[in-house]
Length: 88
Image (cartoon, rainbow, N blue to C red):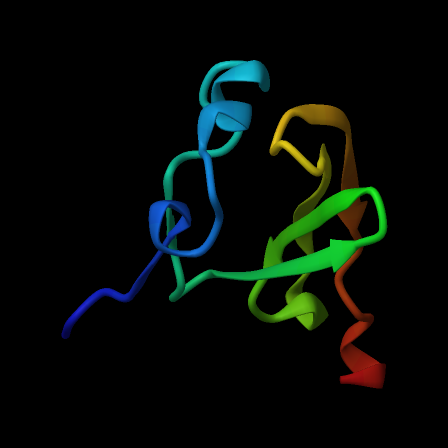
């Protein structure tokens, strides 16, 4: 089975912001079997969301905010609780 990776080098102008985050928190390539990635252009920069592919099972997600020059301005890590079995 081929593993699909989301390569930030192919989707955004710089990856220097990755190295402004705590070591190992985000990598230049994200395994798409387990995660989804969404980059949204905003008025003053970009918002990057990396979260579990299946939010019903829970996991961790990170919202990353970059300025228009791709510099890290903020990030928030959130815990997504799994859906109770009787609601799935």
